[in-house]
Image (cartoon, rainbow, N blue to C red; front, side, top):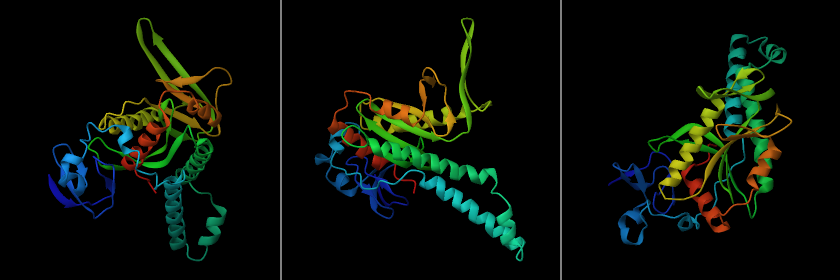
Length: 285
């Protein structure tokens, strides 16, 4: 163990206490875990993180909640401001006119569109929050080595049926799952939206699901974790349910139905799991 000042915000791997950047804490280079000094200096009263149950973290409140789409909107605003500055510098006399006559490039507009979709899904989730659902929005993703990535998880919901990792998407056009193979050849599934292969969306979500499972496994929290793609403004199939690689493809109403499914995760455990995930996946904003 080595005591050092944290370069970025973290949380104690034993008690889940939030640790601000600059705080002195113990770093276990072997297990790659951070511990607050209280847990490190009083190990007999501290719980080993590998034996920690979700209930043990229930006292940690959700104090750092943020609204959905904050990081996506910030990226749009940054790109938009950079474009405006470049045009005004290149055309000091007509820059304002050119800005009024031109449209933002697609690479910039998609960030605003994505932020709007995340806010729409967040509003639906917040309407469900109560006795059965706890929701976290716009959370930093953790890498395999435990460090925080610049990538984010749009939403995490803790429900009676388990933890749902939700990726909000605003692709335009109709959605379909194309399946091929079987019997004598491997079965292949692909996600198409507006005629374009968007299977990468599923792969990206499954990485987020793995990250959440990985964190919960460190405290031996036995709770199902599943991913779901929630589409805003996309034409979903009229009949039957759609899924790919066991990932449901739903709109906001379909998402609500999933989250309200009955299950055996009681209120106390849901609060504990939500508090733990709140610490391990800090707000991206």
